[in-house]
Amino acid sequence: MKRNILLSIILFLSCFSKLDLNAQDYKSDSAWKHAHKNIVRYNLSSALLFGIDKTFILGYERLLKPNQSISMNAGSIVLPKIASISTDSFSLGKDLKNKGYNISLDYRFYLSKQNKYNAPRGIYIGPWYSFNRFMRDNGWDFINNSNQRYATTNTEFNIHSFGAELGYQFILWNRLALDFVMVGPGMGIYNVNAKIDSNLTEGEKEQLRQALADVISNKFPGMNYVFDGKELNGNGKLNVTSLGFRYLIHIGFSF
Image (cartoon, rainbow, N blue to C red):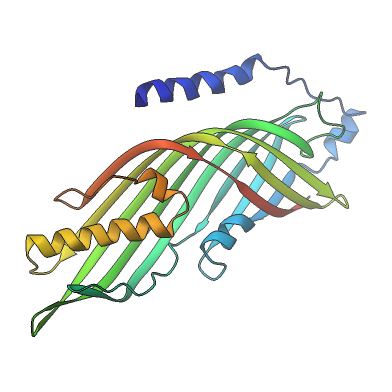
């Protein structure tokens, strides 16, 4: 099943080579020479989803041909703060560490027959790849009758995702770039590794692992679907391959 989905995505991406992607002609070589071929941008959608104070992703797009460009993005991103969690067995203490980063790349083909203006303005399609890594340490208070114990968890969450995208970029006043990735279906490879540092019983560790899985499912957009019915194993690991989706909003400056 997973192999068939992967082959389908590869076949879909290969279809780009069959499309009519001839560049819309610039009026002269001089026009292409003096065209704005660069855009620096800020990832607005991720900041709104994960928090402006903890997320800062910058991007750069470079025109390679009159209708083709490469776009790269990188920056810091963290999981949203966990609200208080408490049961009869344990309660969440505090975040000891909360870090993460994002790296992504896409190659864009601007459709000359559908676009009135030259790239990087107009509708585009192309393949994309993204990698997210989240690292979080938490402290937990365990209560057993009158004895209270303390535990720490170290959670690493990695996501490799790739696929195809359809988007549109506006260039306003010849400088302001508004970029919208509107459709971005793909495949995601999700890996969770949770380590527990304590002398807890196996039953208590199982409760704690399930709490960590629930936190990721509820705090990361779309993970309630990906991790539905899945649990961390006895070693605190979970590996899932599933269909994914990409939607982005960028604001930038063209030069």
